[in-house]
Length: 318
Image (tube, rainbow, N blue to C red; front, side):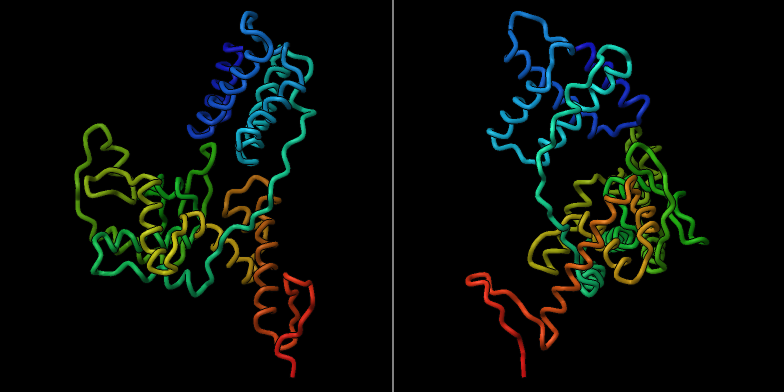
């Protein structure tokens, strides 16, 4: 079993270009399943892929569920096992994928949080001269909201990825896939101002080639990390809402605001780098939900259901 797991992880990295985060998560899930399966079957007999049946996978997921693991985490573990056993079928070590018939746990539907257009605009204006690194921080916020890029993609942006003449930026997404995204004139201006006044800091020799190419760098000259970007967004969002938002909120806001303004769903899919259109379609539900909420709040004859007694009251009837 250990040999099969190592071979599968090698395929993920070398042939499928899986990210380090995905590889670590799959390695952890498979190690967890191997330990569980070995304990259930027998500690004295070697665990082999052929000894795994669908019932064992269901028992594993049920055990993790009893430990309070999130439904999303259980779904990822099942997806990992399906991929692993599918690989073993493909290379001829198994005839049937035992995970194929196992049903994934039903996930709750959570609509992503989205800023209003006014709040998004206000957030861009918070970094100002009193704050240290305000030019960099404003360029970060403008670029996140202008492109809808993932925070990992923002961190990986290099200076030569930006074409000012065309108003475009190249980003490297999941699996190393590249895509081209438009940059707003405001974001381009924020980037140009930041780059023209950024201090010329020399990075350590071990990271010099990567850091000097990076757009966003820290005070020591190194490439910013995703954690640092998250702290920057949180810092200014607390000024805006009193709470904390994640960089991904700006990605959700980017997509929803484009859709509100009539952008084509396929174009949004391309800019976000979604493989499946169904992933992008959640923004249509979000836009509808916001539209209904707005109507309910503002129309004089809108109706709402009182949660306590389910009675319908007309608001603002005259």
